[in-house]
Each structure stands twice: as structure tokens, then as C-alpha cells.
Image (cartoon, rainbow, N blue to C red; front, side, top):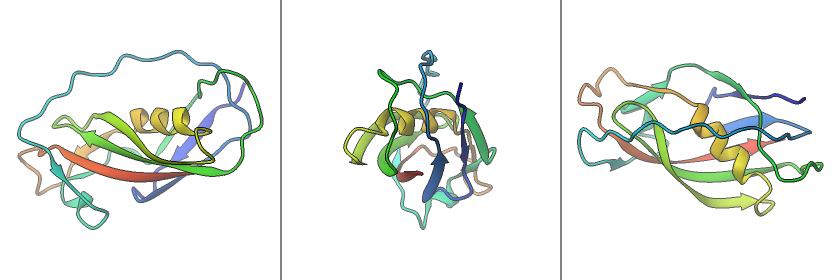
Length: 134
């Protein structure tokens, strides 16, 4: 059994090390809560709204057929709601195409965000993140 560990030291580029994937169950997503209309943020502005609650995450990755995966990355646009939960994931780019999509989305669902000190209104945001797989 292979567990993948995610180290979220930077929201811009996150690296996941994995050589083997295995079948895992799905989890129920929390209900999306929006205290206001979401705003689009960039790498330069994300930390004005949200920060990581914890910096390392481990999880099992679901997969149809076990096979050796190439290095690659997935760029995903997603919503951080007013409770700090991730939803509305959309794959923007995937290299090699499709290989890491499921793992990228799974990584995002494991990340917990807390509002930044100046985000007392808990403003929801849309953010685009690239996750690197090696």
C-alpha cells in the first residue's frame, strides 16, 4: 500500500512524491458556504485572504489501473469558501494529459485553509494552483 504525502510549503507550487497509486474510497464534500461573492486571487494576493491550516497531508490516491506514473503537474482552479473548504475544482492544464488529475483534485480536498488575519469577513476566493508530481 502506498501513501502519498503532500507538503504544502508554498501555495504556488506543491510537490507530491509517488511511484505507485492505489484504489481508495471517495469522501463526502462539505456544503459550500459563501459569506459574500467570491473574488479572483493571484499568487501575490492569496495570503491576504487564506493561509494553510497545516502544511503536510497524506492520502491514498484512487486509480483505475495500477501503472507507473510519469513526473508531471496539474494546474487546477478552485474555490476556497467562507469556511476554508475547497470546491468547484476545474483542471486547467495536465501534463502528461490526464495522468495526475485525480491525485491533484484529491490533494486539494485534503488541504484546509484558515482566514488570514485581515480576512475577518471570510471572503471566498477563486485561486489557480499548480501541483507538481515527482
